[in-house]
Image (cartoon, rainbow, N blue to C red; front, top):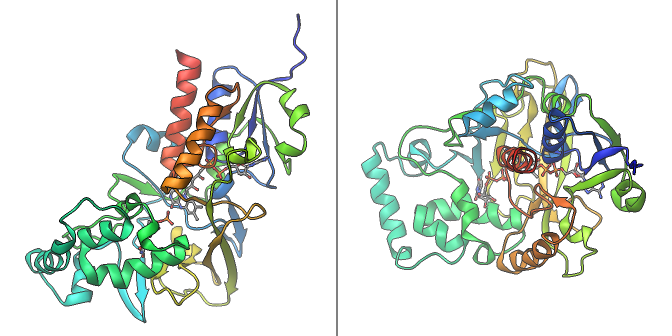
Amino acid sequence: MVSSKKYDFLIVGAGLYGAVFAHEAKKRGKTCLVVDKREHIGGNTFCKKIEDINVHAYGAHIFHTNDKKIWDYVNDFVPFNRYTNSPVANHKGSLYNLPFNMNTFYQLWGTKTPAEAKSIIDEQSKKYQKKQPQNLEEQALSLVGEDIYYKLIKGYTEKQWGRKVTELPAFIIKRLPLRFTFDNNYFNDSFQGIPIGGYNELSGGLLDGIDVQLGVNYFKDKVALDAMAHKTVFTGKIDEYYNYEFGKLEYRGLRFDHEILAIENYQGNAVINYTEADIPYTRILEHKHFEFGQQKKTVITKEYPLEASTELEPYYPINDEKNNNRYLQYKNKASKDLVLFGGRLAEYKYYDMHQVIGAALSKTKKLFDN
Ligand code: FAD
Ligand code: UDP
């Protein structure tokens, strides 16, 4: 019987997971239709051109990886620049380098050698090291001690996540390096940069030659869309896919306030974090610095964290015990489904870009090459 289905795959979501999946499928001779409810491709990596500056429309996105294959993969679509993320923290008007390194320790305590800095951190952290950390607060205090925790972590974390530090999982803080060298590089990875010309070059390259329909909400036309392809790949929220039957998975949302300023250089750095709880935004981005821009004006963005509701975009999965257990129920159900689920929202995982690309590459390799 000849099938009436036009495509091999319907891919819901034109973010990095969907785009990599579609690209890899096309490479193997498969046909794909990618749909996204937003009016653009790239998901959260989307850049909007304002005043000739690539504005990271959904918050700062810095690509970093230790995996040479993933680095080469993305560089095949667009060359990356040498941007190194070195955010600065503002606490009550004083500035501190991030991540926590010899510059930060000098700014905090005037220490000049690793031995001096270590001795202060040991003194402040030893009483917290007696037991296995059960939450973010215990983890942070046992790693960096009290000064760093109270000035640079607690306020930022509580406003970012809208929860008490004692209710948050310890792993979140392990994303931040602690090092005893004068090195402000936020990441330990070997490869890092920003695509020259912005992230749309990457998502556009991945989706080149693939049918894409924008402004299409899958759930509004699910039956007809599914009928167009042999298989569906879903990269949206897994709880929404199953109509929230095991309850809602919680997300932290964000509001991005973009401003154009008629000055060349507002803050001298791409990212400045505001670590006090009383300041309602977590960070200010100045986008031109991601690409060493020389434009006459500048665009800044304040990121205001808020609780994601069903109407708002979900940004950060809240991987605490309650949500992770709930996710496992969805995952179990999904494992028996014919639909494939992947990406930050469908796997309910705090994935970075390189990880989401890695996940889509593994999935397609397993599917097509075994
Ligand atoms: P998404 O980019 O979320 O794409 C999913 C797509 O599915 C979306 O476009 C959505 O519109 C679409 N969709 C959902 N439901 C439907 C539906 N019903 N119908 C149609 N379409 C639908 N990573 C880094 O490596 N470095 C960083 O510096 C970094 N910074 C970040 C900062 C912020 C504020 C955030 C939120 C994330 C950051 N990330 C960073 C993570 C990065 O954004 C993700 O790893 C990556 O974008 C995930 O890709 P994805 O395809 O899984 O999801
Ligand atoms: N964090 C902090 N102070 C900072 C920056 C980060 O306490 O100045 C903590 C906070 O809990 C945050 C986590 O470290 O959620 C991870 O930070 P990262 O910059 O990796 O977060 P993302 O870029 O994903 O928002």
